[in-house]
Image (cartoon, rainbow, N blue to C red):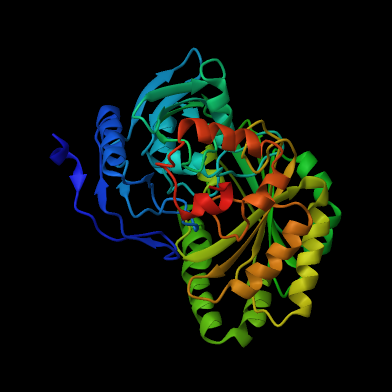
Length: 439
């Protein structure tokens, strides 16, 4: 029976090329029962187990030398409950497929991140988020989840059923079991008007609190080596829909944001001295635009230029201080930074290891083009973030360990105690989890 869903073992590499693993075997179970059987057999064989989605995490959160589970046969919508306004979706479903399926049903998630290549389980397990004044991460929109634990038990968790597991597993980093399905809150589809506008760094930081307060979703990008930013404000609209024209959309989102940017990044990597001039030129080339469309077409955009990324969540009331320190660090250093710095916000939530757990947060993400040495830049950024009790994104590059993380997460001990109960033998462990959660 197991031959129907077993794969020949082969090397696995993540999207950014920063992590490679060679599992003993890989498997693609086609049902929850088959997945539970995979877990039980791995335990009997003394092999650790890790599920992997689209590989968009920059860390080794999914790496294993044991059994690597691909959930690509566990996809699709199980159920739409229009009375409860929820959708139950299989864990391996890509966000892109979920968003388009919901739109066909006249439904939408309330908020989402800026890409949709990840699987729903991978996105929620690492705390993937967008930006929002009141609306939080995708994980915060979970109303129930189904989890296969280390002994092969299928556990359903919600605020009413196994609530202590629910409080932790919504952002579980794969440490508590293998998620097989997620129930998300949805709402009738709505329209968002996006207003994109260049703005100076000094103005954005001076008006940051006002910009966050006045907009449902506010974010901006600062271009290092310049005083220039690009802001984006998304707010609900009564319509009518007015999506970008096909030609203008292709020019902005494909030609400039991907094609020309790819060339600029390649030139900057080959000749770093050109980066400040390229940054000044590209940031001045930005123009304002506004459009109105359904949510996923406004929240998300294509990202074809490969990069590496570090992101930290800091207390929102310290965001401007952190940004000014970051800008000053870049200006006094010899670093040449080709990618803009991304800034978003989220309200406090109640999940134990959410980066917004218990506090309103600002997310500050730094990137470098794939293949560019990143250690000096990321180390300098991390020094600033940790000085402000920053919490690293679980799926993005960082060097923090359990000793540090236990200090910045008040409910860290609650999570690790639950892990000890659900996975005492560390069937779902790996080197990354050992570093960030302890033995």
